Length: 552
Image (tube, rainbow, N blue to C red; front, side):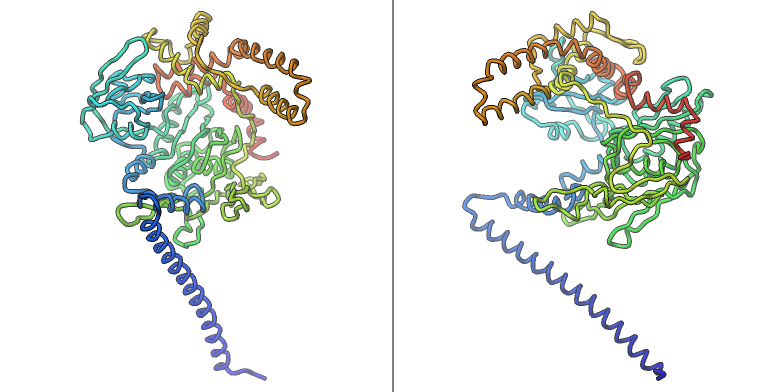
């Protein structure tokens, strides 16, 4: 039987109404749940504020509730109070008005930990290791680094007076004029050897792309430059568009770098390179570590997906989430995860699945069985769900327990401060090395200082003791246990000498920072850095480099 056009029209209208009714019901149901729970929350908050046995702080209680709610989503969705807005602006822009120094805690006082080159602190000869006693005539004893940072910031051209205590020189007063500070994203670039350039990128604040571009253009002025290393190790990420700009330095205009997809369609965006590149052919190695995250992974993953360079080091962190800020009332903001990002092959490198928590509230990683295979531009296999895997994996450097303890206890830091007072200058970083007499001076310096630590062997021995006690065997082996424990303690006294080369390397790096600032932290490690060694070996073998990129 042939059905009339009017019949089909009625069917279509009925179906449309059914769909609209479903969405209307769904929207109404969601609205009711939201309204109901907001009402419950408001009445609960009122009852606690009125009847709780002790006096409460309403603002603090509310902040606790907000933070707990947001933390149940992911670690990157945060509430930013009015008082925290300025700190957030500094974090994303890399700019503030201050003296150009960072601080840390040492006992009851604040310690200058870093001084930025060419800024007021350095011009006034403030040094890492200086202990701040007073600011503008007021004691800062008991202040924490956050409170201290606020005191050091102020208006451009305003004066701040610091009373400091310096190793070997006693108390000194410094008058410093504040300036606008821009923390560099590229603290160092230069030549590692005759042919290989190196760019260290530590952040993705405003102008990160321009800083990388300028660094590469400066390196290219050297006619012997034939390859480049871009170091993203330890870089926690930042602005997404700066990641696109950095990829653009090495790839043509119009190249797809990243897509973002969210629940709300306005966050479905595509990012292409917009500018002319600096060099699309020069052999490139990108260094990554387990702490290379977010925008760093967009750069490393895109370079890998486009077969533009080789990734060397350790698997990256695995943060494939994008955050945006939304304005709230009373000058507050919400930083909220709005999308996931997908690099050119189509993969998302997010490691943790926050949408499916375990019964205890913990977050699990994506199972290997759920990982999907993708292809690079040239057909190489790559995978999603867990960071960017390097093309050449290098074991992460692990410090000996004694070296780690000397760092954590600030003993290497304090010796560098002492060395700086005793030596007005040192040679260029690449030519600087400590003598045996210097190392003996360090050994004298650490006598009587606390730098105790537990080795894995000692930890195992303590576990063995506990099990023996639980099973009632310990009394029979106590003498043997005590002798073994004493032997381990005696061996620890020799650990300094056994790890002399490693400790000297750490000392040289820390001392060099006293004279050459942030760039020394990078340059001083060139000779001993396993990732850089692997990268330079690869770049010296173009057959292997091309074989990795082609997969053949």
